[in-house]
Image (tube, rainbow, N blue to C red; front, side):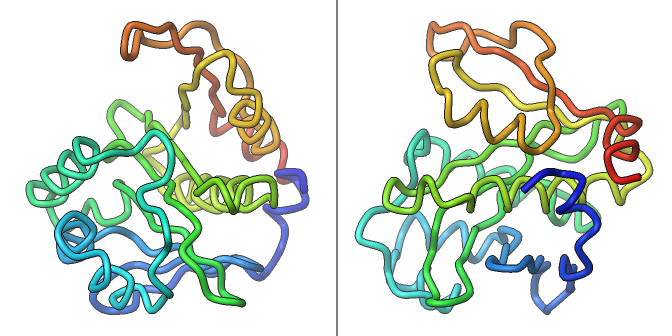
Length: 200
């Protein structure tokens, strides 16, 4: 599914369902992280699953996530102002049959017109297009905010599936990214101008 075709679909819905923000696509429900969800994710996985109304996954968190990243996510939520809802992690749920697939989201609110997106699906749910569908939806959501001029993402050069997700979502190679865990990352980006041209 290309970004052009996805962006024109009428069934991408954004709903504010108290106490959080939910985003719906053809197959997915994305739930913006909250302090309550983040604390349960760390301390009580059965409660975390109940809050999301999904069966408890056999394995959690998804790849490239760990206790350190979970605690960082919680700390960011605890200090974020109310108007920054949605600019952290979102939990990715399949609507039917209901399941927790993974997570995707942003590394903070826009700064100087820029937001960084990241994503990871549980191994058993990879290869089904869920990650692409989630990232496309979040990209559309991001560009609904006029202060967002560019969405970027970083990955490792050897992670071909991650690169394919970025390319399917309209991002293009932009050079080297930062060093992470002693390894060089690469950067992909999608400008507002390119995003809107793909939707025409």
